[in-house]
Image 1 (cartoon, rainbow, N blue to C red):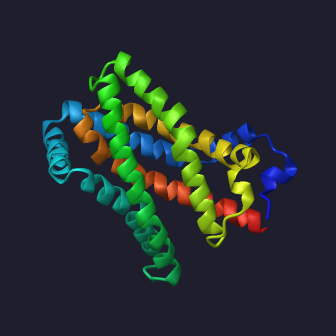
Image 2: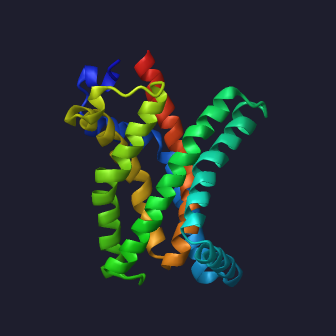
Length: 234
């Protein structure tokens, strides 16, 4: 079934701005949390020491830390919150289905992000200065995101929401225009400030704090994806 956006020919950028406006408050929560951690890292010695211990744990575990942290942050935490806040503590079969999808998906994304952040540090450096941070943010949000992160996330969540059925329209320019472009606008509204904060921090600290932002973003994106599926069904 086609999405209403495609049927009514709503401009993708308009759909994206509408999604971004709808997510202003949750996005501000994510951004505020990241900014607070940046300030604590720079100005509060105990917090800086705690973050450095996380970085040491990440260094000791290697890429396995990134996979595990992303799986927990992106899949387990949002589903626990759904059970506690939305289902009054009652587990449902749908919760386990979501975990079966979310754990491998977000774990794989954690693996990719770890490699990407390491590459960014090698390409541009690891200093919190404009000449380093600005190229990192631009590559992150306007190369990596539109070419890989956004389409892969949209495709796989849509595949899940369609009952794990994939149709030909997944791999068309029209699908990218009608589904991925709106998601990009919504993503940029949240993640441009978030990744700016991340790149202002030392590379070993980036993945642990990325996990926090990911947990909040996974809750937000899961809601967006499920809402889109409900609109399509209607």
